[in-house]
Amino acid sequence: MDFYWSSLEFTGVHWNPWSRGKYCDILILSLFSEGRTINIMNVYSDNQHTAINLLAERAHTLPACVLMTGDFNCHSCEWDPSVPYHRTTAISLLDIAARLGLELTLPVNPGPTFLSHNVELRGSVIDLVFIKASESLVQPRRLLEWQGPLDHIPLASKFSLPSELEDFKRVSIAKGSDMETQFVEQLIGGI
View (tube, rainbow, N blue to C red):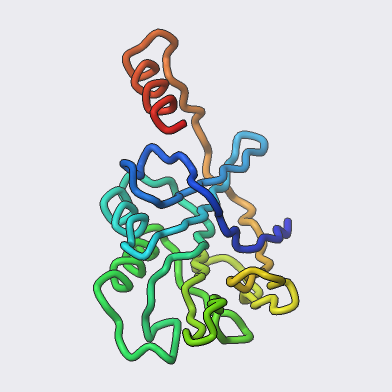
């Protein structure tokens, strides 16, 4: 089965119980079919690297994913040849991906993924794609013609879903439990 996706860019504030009031988004989309599941993660990390730090802290609790993509706001010579360094946050991001069984995959048409509306700033590569190493993949492509008025260039790729997906167990919160009360309080607090 082929699956098409493009990097999602978030605007506004999204509630995320992991964020502890900081601005970051970590969205895990789970697709279910006949008792099987596939997880796809989209990440927005602010310039303080909040989501990257949170992922590093909680990587052991994350489900297996076939894809992690998003705006990581992280610079490194590993994915941007105009950057002369490879700092701790970038190393941490690559380590997170490795722990999830994912590898960085660069676009076939290299170049910036972020072009500031401020012409004094140079473009940079901050939107990244990590994919399960064992998956067949057509490398991502920067879709320059889809940029429009945005400051990010959309990324798109095509990959095949594995024929064998992990079994899943539905998780739910027991009605009337302390966990339900805590969840509702977190939800109300985030609205």
